[in-house]
Image 1: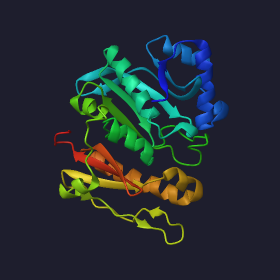
Image 2: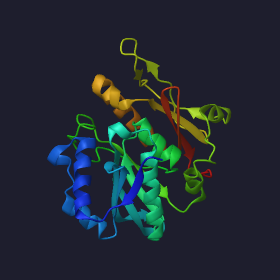
Image 3: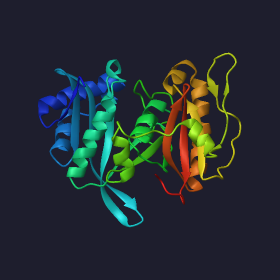
Image 4: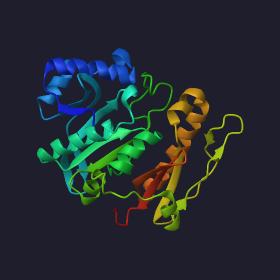
Length: 285
């Protein structure tokens, strides 16, 4: 491992975090988190991490304390607001290491739950958040951040999943043990009679996946929801198609969540992503 993860608590470090946020998201002043706010978060129960290769900061994660409504009432949680890795340093496991550092420190604070939001159409993020970390989700938020202007999100409805990461569960501990955790393949989900809610087709001219006109209602214990493998490229090269995927999957996920299903896994195979949803009455493993 050529990088290190550090818990940050100095103002000079926060200036570097502020700069890295702009390098990753490209939002300028509208997307900036000022250093004075970052240092306040770090000194008042929040957590700010930096990932370093040598002296260069290449990744960050930051969050703060919040509350979460459950059937048993409000519980204390860590709200992970932002996590990102510089484009030149992705694919090295840095995002996983940053989240594991958050997991370790939040548990040390006596916290059981961490939440964050992410775009449900980003396969890379879904694979990390759901597939590798073991977060779950049954909450879809339409236009959560309003009209966004940063380079990664501008021009598209800011719909988000709210992921729940229950830090002290065997499910999460197993997934964080990367050397011993054995992932379930798409073929194994098919053998378990998982229901595919729809089958996308490839656009004849663009060579990109198109959402179908309709989908099946979820009925089985396990259901599969496919999404494009590289939604960011689609957003840049075929924005209208990206809009169609946004509104189509919004309808699919809201329907499934209303029926009591929970996102419990994510598989990425053959250039395509697949969400696995489990009936809420079934055991989540």
